Image (cartoon, rainbow, N blue to C red; front, side, top):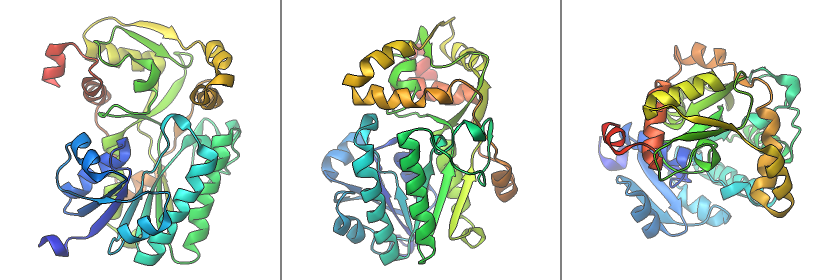
Amino acid sequence: MSEQTKPLALVIGATGGLGGELADQLVAGGWRVRALHRDPERARAQTGRTGLEWVKGDASIKADVVRAAEGATVLVHGANTPGYRNWGTLHMPMLENSIAAARASGARILFPGAVYNFGPDAFPSLREDQPQKPVTRKGAIRVKLEQALRDAADTGVRSLVVRAGDFISKRPGTSWLAQGMVKSGRPVSALVYPGPLEIAHGWAYLPDLAETFVRLLEAPERLADFEVFHMRGYAVTGHEFVAALQTVAGRKIAVQRLPWFAVAAVSPFNETFRETLELRYLWDRPVLMDNAKLVAHLGAEPQTPLTEALRTALAGMGSLPTERAIAA
């Protein structure tokens, strides 16, 4: 297949965790991938990622997104704001731009779903068809984003949403693991855990999540115009998570509970802390994804062993002893 006959995907957020993984896996799967960025040369140098067509543009400017999506059959909407900042003002306009671009090009939008669309009434096992009754501001925004995609399907804009738990990524970025549970840049010796250790919590390794998206795209005729799947990932207690982390680190790790009272004290003066505080309810009880629909569709959910996922993530954070980082 020549380069010009390969299917084209536009990735918004290729420098991020999931956007980067999807870009890599689409390229490996024979796609031509175009990546939108405000500074393409800096993005190319920052990621070191080859095989992408970097184009200049801003996800918040409709004309830029529409132009970048010309000829695309898939549009990855991985746009995000660092540290949960400006959620209320940025996310819906950026998604509306992606919807407009998908309408013009005929592309299907790939959209990563979030757990906090749901309130405690839906716990502990979340299904795709459960009512979404968010109890946080971010959750309410997320519900509106998915509703916008659902409404767009009525006018011919197709989308695919895959929802998963908290991320484990081989690239440093915004995740519980990298942004507070483990210190980056030094061998891991301690873990700050946000919830009770005996409660099960859902995690997703980003390469597995990206593979799930790509495998679902392999049979587009089986997908509805607006389609949602839940990915189970790792459903493990805090004790099991700590045990896996200790196996990877090769040492006993001191475990501390996240001092939520300190987060609450600082939150009036810090937007990231304020937005993080909203999510405490997701750690106080089991929150797991029901993946029966996904398994029925694919046969099995992609899943890397938890220790391998953590080893790769910690190596990327510079949080493994040198000899173990080399082995990873």
